Every structure is written in C-alpha cells, then in structure tokens.
Amino acid sequence: MWVEKTSTKVIRFDYNKIDLNGIREELRSCNWDEEMKGNVNESWALFKRRLLDLQHKYVPKAMVQGEKLRKEIWLTHKQLKR
Image (cartoon, rainbow, N blue to C red; front, side, top):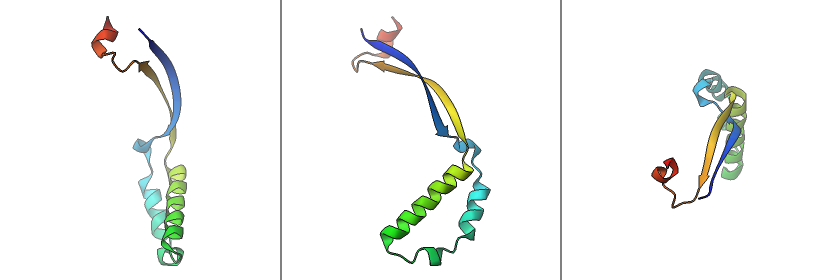
C-alpha cells in the first residue's frame, strides 16, 4: 500500500479580509471612457491588469498550512483507516 503524507505551506489571498471599499473607490475614480479607447484586447488587458493590481493592494495574504494526502486512486477512505 502506497500512502505519502506531506505537510505543505502555501501563501494565498485571504478574501475574508478584503477591503472592498478601497477597491470600489479606486474603480470609481478611474475614467473608464478614457482608459478603454483601444481595441477590445488592449482594453481587456488593461482592465485585467488593474484588477490584479487592486487584488495585490487590497487583499491580504495569509500562510495556509495543510496536509496533502497522496494515495492510489483505488484506495478508499475505509481502507486507509485499517
């Protein structure tokens, strides 16, 4: 029987502590008509970049530690408990 347990630490965005008011204010302050004058692909790239920047600015990061259990596909929960 092949079972491997590994402890993993991952840094993720903590959306439970997001600053929505800050994001809303920045989005309201943009002159979207002026910024979206390019073609569709350029406008999408600009909008996506702006959202990612806001995510990094207003969503805190947290270290998440968990266990990852790797097992054979056929191995069920009941068989692991034996």
